[in-house]
Length: 422
Image 1: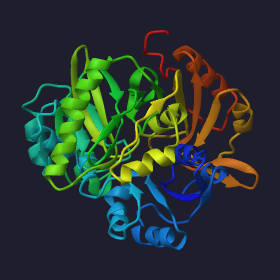
Image 2: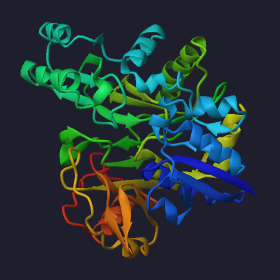
Image 3: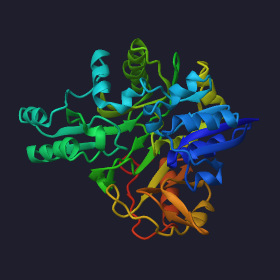
Image 4: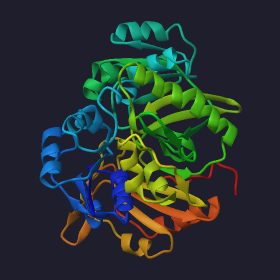
């Protein structure tokens, strides 16, 4: 029987640990550092997800058979490199391969080199030069912090004043810290945004059904960007031939480009796409499972997740199978999110929601206070539902949401509903 270590602390890691614990091969799942939800399906370990040496020591001392990177900052910190150097099986990209996410400028240059369709762009490490460039462009423009910013480092600017503010926030005020040492300025893309996930073993890849995240905090895509307020899968915004084209024109060239830089990619590669009729462009690449996308994919994937992820680490990727039907996740967030958020608010109704058929509630920003779950972050819970049809899954999710409450709770009421009724 196998032991697994999941690295991270959010809803994505709860979903991964939950699914891995169902493997007939897995005896124990550890999560570092985890949250109060992951403690329901495994054992939390008080090690930060960027602490590569202590994570390695724990894996050796506890005979861990497979480590799974959830949190992108772990890859950026070189956790995978340290494990690989010690000969331990780990699912996730090396620090160099993870540059496809951890540096927007690197990623855009890679797309240019490999002729991957994306918006016109320019990178700057000087705010004055960035502002000069913007004066020559038509609006809207998109300003992106170069480094990791938990999904919040992107601002759509509709005039020069907004662009100037975004550049100052990122590069001068450093609201995202060192991630704002450089910015990418790119043309705005219109259309429908979809998420594509691909497992890669360094040689082979296998694509997931497309999903759609909802980034803005408010209904109808209003307000600032967040890490994601909800997701639905699968979506029919692209057909099978277009999906095959994405693999051939986006995924494989990206993997080839990384391999040419001696940065062979093993893990989950997640390009976010903008689809406008037949035109498909890459918005950005991520080097891990999406959050909240992982929460719906873990409800839909069919088979032994341990076997699938372990096969990636051995360059022997197993075929993927998917259950029929649809999955939806609705994020419940604290008051103030995506800015500073309330903590310590008692959460009511999780057990009642999970008594409903086909409902699983994954924890993101929660903690325990005695017998109560309390809020401990911006995104608090992911209420997930599965259904035979898209509408059935959506309706079940929102019925469950109505059973949960905490002071200041906010959520979108339109997850999945921008798609045609089905």
